Image 1 (tube, one colour):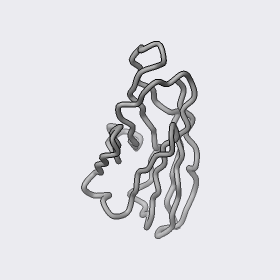
Image 2: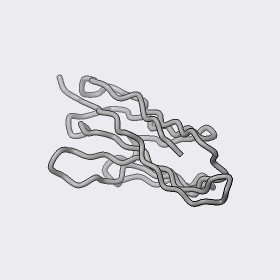
Image 3: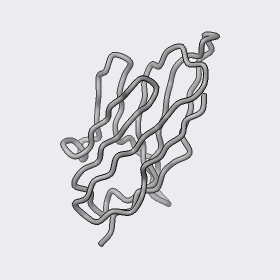
Image 4: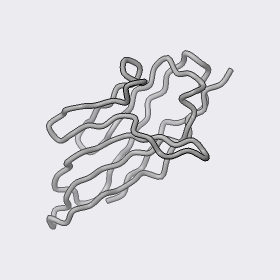
Length: 117
């Protein structure tokens, strides 16, 4: 299963971006999906996650500004009121099973979000 992330770019503080992550391959089910971000020199951190049933969770510092959503095998992250501290490479992650009932975990290639004036 391959994930293709897109939607990153440069935005001014206070602006918004919507990231997308499209999965391709023979997916039977998805257990969980999520967005992570990483700044050079720091560990990758959780941004938001969603279970198969639709339960969502967010990093405490991002609640109210970021919204994770899903449409079939595409995952989205709506980011509002962005600040320079949100500058990072954003990665998506899927955990599920293929149609051959083989478990998989896949990462997207990362999309860069830069927030600056």
